[in-house]
Length: 117
Image (cartoon, rainbow, N blue to C red; front, side):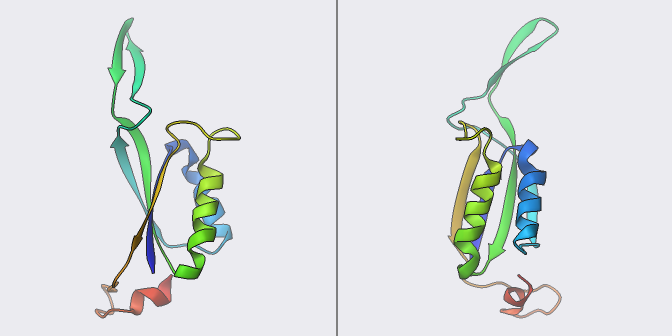
């Protein structure tokens, strides 16, 4: 099993969620995130005064998938999270982590989670 952590634009959440549902990936967590990357913030104005917003709002998806669904899931997220045809700075990142074990809180033993994904 692998854990996919995808950091995406908030406006792309419903598009990515719908695309994942179509490929039968139904279980994932969604978290609000703020961060700083190559985009280096934005200039905003409030009552005529400009100021710099360095930490921008993003959405973090945490998805547990079997190894055979890893590449299709990554490609689906990437394709649906892009802004514009080629993407732009600030569209996000995808991280893949190995999962050594998963414990179902209800069942209380390892291995039960893999049956649910």
